Length: 215
Image 1 (cartoon, rainbow, N blue to C red):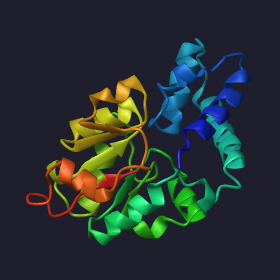
Image 2 (image 1 turned 90 degrees about the horizontal axis):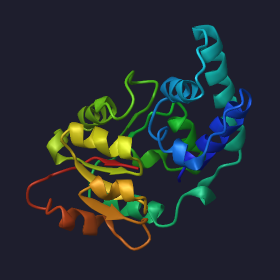
Image 3 (image 1 turned 120 degrees about the horizontal axis):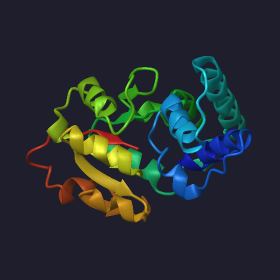
Image 4 (image 1 turned 30 degrees about the vertical axis):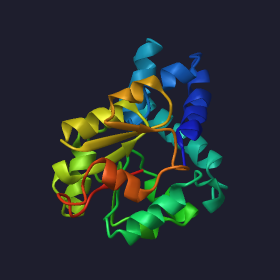
């Protein structure tokens, strides 16, 4: 599922409290970035200098807004083609890891019923540095016992792609945003591509025994 829209609405609601209009274009700077860092980016743009106590309170408020928005998420909200892709990846015996800046990643996996597909989950609770720092992906690779150069990362943000490149991993951009052109391969969604297609495209069948697929 694409949770960026829910994060956008939550940040937009919070920002309106101190008179800052959060646009969709500005929201691109927040994708893949952990909560406190995202707040810092917004406050800097709004030219606000707040105490740490107030910032922590605002970050907690944003999370409350976000949790309200995702309260009714279920398997019906999984993006078209993703469940089939996960099933195919499992059939190919390719270990799958999730690398996310969100501290709500486990909650979302449980609500959508796909947690069992992931061999390891690295979220904002397990790492301290957010994308474009490669920590989340490097940690995920270690979690499934795969070298970074033998991993394939699926990302929908520029910061996520930068993190994957810095980690020395292969990259697939998901979506139609021009910034995703930095990826080695760009797909609009998962409706017309299979796990086998990805493996063959990267010619991994004879040189990579396993890979990391981060959705």
